[in-house]
Length: 470
Ligand SMILES: *Cc1c(COP(=O)(O)O)cnc(C)c1O
Image (cartoon, rainbow, N blue to C red; front, top):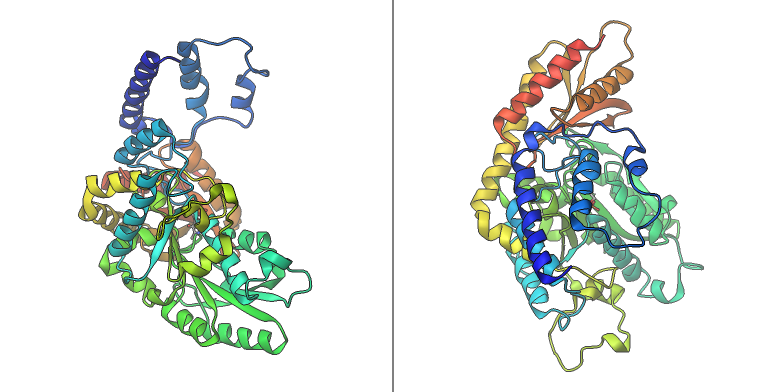
């Protein structure tokens, strides 16, 4: 591809993107394809000869697009959003054109320094105190892994990386049973082992860890000769928005000298609104906090910020300094590859910078407040219907519900059929979860372009299809 072609096809792609975004409402959110359809449509072997771009692009439109789930669709109410505001897409285009590998300050000074600045912008936006610094990770899973590794190394006096875990005292990590599976995986990968992730029972509307039980478990483990290393708390769990009492958990962590990591991957975005910060009162007592601007806030995937109270212990856990990476003679410069598990890193700060400037915090707050209000409105409407019940009350913009089938109908099977019917219909997309062992349907409003009328469409679709099931 020569430079003229590059220019022409980049323009084509930009036009395509704008057309795509403006026609999303006309498309089914989830594609009506069967497993294997796309795979079978792709040539079995790679081409020996160059193909014309026209043909490649046509195949993208004809073979790939029909098999895409449209995450930027305004009626995407499944999972959590992965919002890519148009302005962040433009920034990503620039990033991909420059294609810098930003592992060290010297491999991209601007990327490093903009990262430091935008992370601090987000610290201020979320109301976190001065003294927290941070890094942009690829995902909350990576941030949590890095936090668990730091817990491990602190507890083992920095001997885990050197000696391995064989022969060491058993490490113990504590969390509720509402945490995301990325916590389990961090525990597996760090070598601590699932048997040493202690699940503390939860109670109350927000399914918060019982902190008395947490403290009792820590003391019992220590008495039994084990080594408590850290606590993972959550604000806005994936299933129903489970949220721990961070102040109380931080208190326990402080009393027992444990490292506290808080997973607010989804809910963290809402903390730009002061009125929601009561959900994480006490957050300044955390050692590590992760939240994903690539979820609700609108920074194109991937963009996950990990705030750290003491980056020293984090860097001491993760930094390797082979000679060829050393940047001699620069005091005080940051090499962000020392703050994460992967060495190579993309320039992730640019899209955040563009996003924050183009919308302003007020614009983003309005979006989030609208989503919360519309979600609460829908929860109230559904609860008033005689054949629907709320399973979990709204936590920010997330709630769950169930439809009551007729007498003798298996409730779980009935609600799974309803989710499938809704998603096959295509007007909206949502997902199910299990609450206290029973199937519930999750609903969250979070898509960047969603409107009140999209949420009305959700109400109509859900009630119509539920009553159509026999
Ligand atoms: C989405 C989510 C994660 C995982 O985030 P990734 O960035 O995909 O790793 C972890 N915890 C919670 C609460 C989440 O909502």
